[in-house]
Structure formats: C-alpha cells, structure tokens
View 1 (spheres, rainbow, N blue to C red):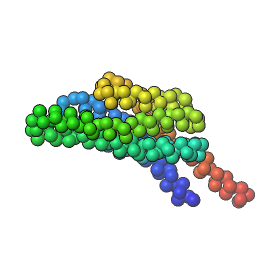
View 2 (view 1 turned 180 degrees about the horizontal axis):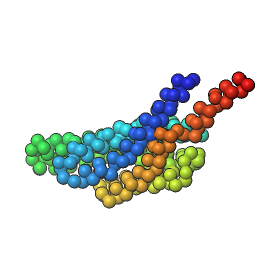
View 3 (view 1 turned 30 degrees about the horizontal axis):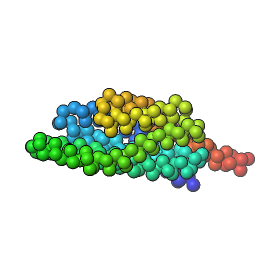
Length: 217
C-alpha cells in the first residue's frame, strides 16, 4: 500500500513538471514556426517535446477526477492520448519541411508537396488533433463540476481550448499566442498543484497515520 502511495506521488510530481514545461514552451515554439525557415526545425522539435510531455502532464490532471467523476476521467484520458499523438505528428511535418528546404529542394516542388499535404494529410490530422482541444475543454468542465479546481482555472482552460484551434488551424499568429497565453495560466497552476500534492492525496496519506496512532493508544 505504501509503495503504491509513493509511486502515485512520484507520478504526480512528474505530471506537474511536464505540465509546466509544456505550457512554457508553447509561445516560443509558435513564434519559431512563423519566423525564418531556419527556425522551422526548432519549432518542430520543441513542438514534439510539448506534446510528449503533455501526455503524462494532462493525464495527471485527469487523475484528479478519478474519485468524483471516474467515467469522465477515463474518457478524457483517451482524448488526451489521441490528441497529443496527432499534435506531435503536425509538429514533425515542420522538421520535414525544414529538411527539404535545407537540402535545396526547388520551391516549386515544396509548394506542390505542401499543397497535397494540406488537401490530403492535414484533414486527417485535424480530425484526430482536435481531440486535444476537446480534452482540454472536457477537463475544464470536469474540474468546474467537481470543484476540483477554482472556477477561474476551469474557465480559462475552457476558453483557451476554444480559442486554440481557431489560431492554429486558421494559422493566425496573434490568436495562437492569445490561446497559448490563456492556457499557460491554468496549466501552470495545475502543474504547481500536482507538485505540491492534491488534497485528496494528502487525505489518503494522513488516514493510515491517524489509524496507527489510534491503535497504539
């Protein structure tokens, strides 16, 4: 039992760190994407890191809902996994584009590849990656309904989840930065909470201790 508790606590800490790192990397990554072609590689690499660390990070938030909303916790976990994998696929395309340009591929060929990608590949990725935004939306609603987080945290998460696809799918830099900034605040707050330990976990740790004192008395 104690081993499980320690493992859960370590998992919470890792989730907290991952959540904070992913949220902080968002704005510079998007800026790199809209900068010179030489920065596309870094935009793709950092974007890939973001979605990798968001998997354990957001799953840590989903676990906060396990006791009060178990079904919702399981559903949102599946949405997070699918959405993050698709989001990572989007980011790797930036690295391939950088490689093609660096290798000296003619602009006309790059334009043709990009055109085909937008017509055939992007629609598929959008269908799956939109689940990332849906997972943030559902998380925000779940946190609000279960009172697991303050109303303002849940509200910012919901607003950011709605604005995020408008900016990124519509390739509007200002809106993308706005969404990432809105999401930065609740994600960092949740990350710090996971690092400190959720109240439910603190209660679970204190119960055996009180029982032990009772037994000794």
